[in-house]
Length: 394
Image (cartoon, rainbow, N blue to C red):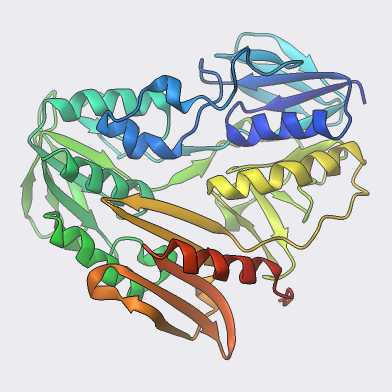
């Protein structure tokens, strides 16, 4: 294999390129990135970067001197793929042909319909998004956050720490309910309310009001929430449109993500996928699923590189349970596992009322997920246990 093209210059793309070198690939590596920036760390965008506690230099994922032996094509998007020929069409009119291709194009934030061109309306996925939101928050007094997923909850916490009047609108029973289940999400909802966030659940936004610039949000029941800044944290969709008609299979059940085997291999020889756009098959669950967390990108990059370099013959170790963390106010939230498999959840250490506790989700007697809230040491032990426990295949 002479040339490998990595399409996507974020964490997953960078780490896969490094893994290719680390596993002995001595040929050419070209990384194509739609953004003009070198790879950067995204988790701080909604927290310390938004607060102004760190700058752009602190987000860099590369050391001084950059990444040796990698060619960069930044500010250029992939627009098409001829999979049998392994030829990529680029937005600048050029093409790249490679012996191996890594699809790492990530996911894009969903935008609020009908708000195009309306100032003061933001989503947060990229460095440029964070720059714009940070600038707007400096002049704002009232913020409405739509969506209580990770981005919504973290932005709400950060805006509140900046002293702003914050309202969080969530269609479900509580922020993060879709991720950690309604019981534990209800506990964490109290964290926001105690810190002064107005929380409106079971509500739907029908309109962002304002002419030229947003001045509020209208809910389905007619309630109008005044706002200087509106932030939509309503999820993301895989950036896989450029693969249409290529022969690389996409999955409707995984939001259009690239369907992969348990090693990241697609149905096309010589092409693997990794990161937010990739839906790997998980034997433990008996289905494909996407992982949009930092740790997932880190763990899978090494596996995808091995799959590509071995021609698909490398056998990956059983996948570890998905892990994520979130910092909100002075509280560290850590989670590992699959809460959807659980039939019980119990608090086994601490007190939810103090926002320092550990909860275990079980299916029968078997732990399937663990939530730690300001319980780093105990959670670390549980995480080690979850990652080394025998895999139960679905």
